[in-house]
Length: 113
Image 1 (cartoon, one colour):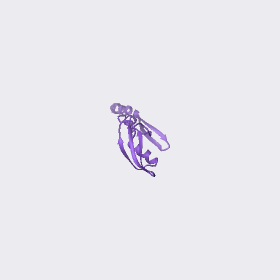
Image 2: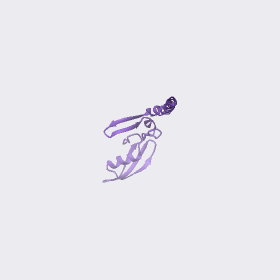
Image 3: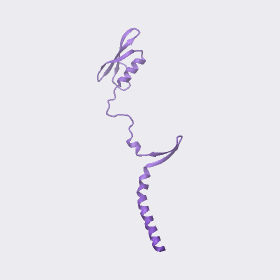
Image 4: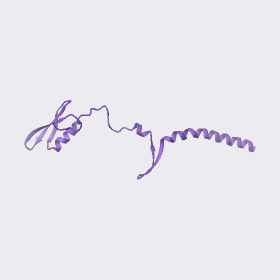
């Protein structure tokens, strides 16, 4: 009786070891981090799928909203985009002296022409 109980226990240990081994190898892409926010679980694969918000297909020109913001900060009231081309963005608005136009190059940073 004791021998058969030992064989059953050895068999259960072998089966348990076979089922646990794949879960141990799958958990290698997780790590625990201790920081100011406390203890947290960090998934290494998450960084590969993360979207950083930078679209590489989008043209790298001047964003029209940035051109409007720059014009407003320069004192243009009721600023609106009048013309957009592949080379420039023209913003029109009012100043204390009357109607005014500002032209920006259609490059990153919206430099004024």
